[in-house]
Image 1: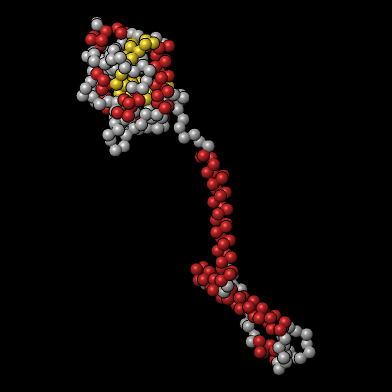
Image 2: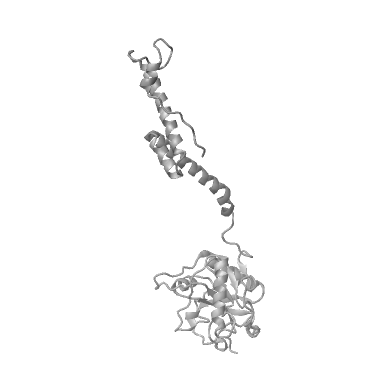
Length: 302
């Protein structure tokens, strides 16, 4: 900032003494009675002179000292007005950024999947190292649907559910076989293909070659402090999957739905919350046609 040359202030008494009476001026003559208008004008001119002097001196100071000097030479009302203006400017800038930049992100869908509800193995990036070719041809079309739960944490988006299915598959790899279920139902209400139709699975001992195993992702044991709760979307998509099985000839129209705990007394799957829901379903084995059987041979007779 360049220096401002400010002429020295001439004391008002000297100015008054040098101006003869009768000359038109806003300053009164020495010894003359003071006039209100002239006094106000003189005070205004003095403030201007003092402000110019302060600015001239402050221009030679560091920035923080200069700002402090300016603050000292302003009234409280002026400082408050300046502060309010700064706040208003900050609010305006924030609103502009929010509506111009932030709106670009609000239009991005939070949960995008390659299919509305039916997620195939390639879609969730299945590892095919231990995929099986063993089929259920001997008992097709199948009559038994066995429901389990994964006893894992929940997932509510395609991205998180696909990651959870891959995690479950890796856990099964420890036993050197593919993911245990034929299908899994995510908390997002989507069906994730495990081994798929017409494949022998590894979900319930004694029934793997003559049933379809469906695993609900989550832990549905109500005795836990926090547990999964079956949703309407999960139920609807499960019914859509079973209708697909009947339509494509993998299931008999009069299939039976049971829980793993119905045929394995030491197994608590699929948890009380999901189990109580299953027992309301039309195809649940209320008449105990399957319940009580030991294995496929015991049920089918061959």
